[in-house]
Length: 243
Image 1 (cartoon, rainbow, N blue to C red):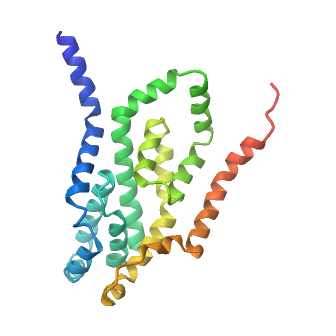
Image 2 (image 1 turned 90 degrees about the horizontal axis):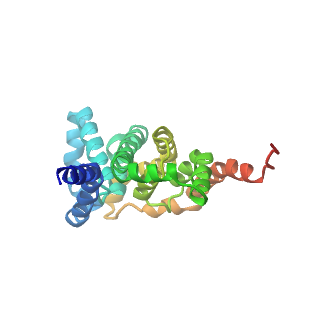
Image 3 (image 1 turned 180 degrees about the vertical axis):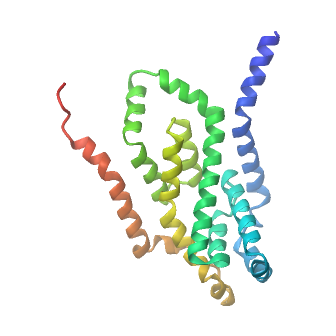
């Protein structure tokens, strides 16, 4: 009886990180959706700029911490946070803060899933045979390319791109550097919007995030996607050597 109880407790504790992420995400989606908005940024922009001028590093640390929490718990307001980075810190520093914070947050989701549900699924994948084994091998052969595509294609939800790799057992090192590299193009666009957001607010308007889908912006990103898929295409078309 005691062994059964200990086993159930151990199983529950192993899933606690993922349970915590999902729980906070649900609570945050309900309670914060009306607060992490451009209206909030507009109403508090003068106070934020004054604090930045007095304590630049302190505000940068606070901003990074908030951004990481938004990503880890998939809270509403990631786009607002990215624009705020450009508004407060400029294009270069804002992009760097956005990329570093988003990468750390994405790693938090990855590790929470890996330590919880991911461990069990990874073990099953390792022992699987047949088609599952073939799928796992195919993923590993193109791991870097697929991870980059998940980051470069804006249509893929960020939370999915963080969770899915953990559940299929990709290497954390590859996840980390492809995340940091792959989100740079999108981060530059959102940060650039933030650089001019003050003038947008002065006109009584909201930032136009549809800029990401403009041909001159999405075109280069899709070009990078094509480059990322080229190794997969080459491997597929390359004739197999006879043993």
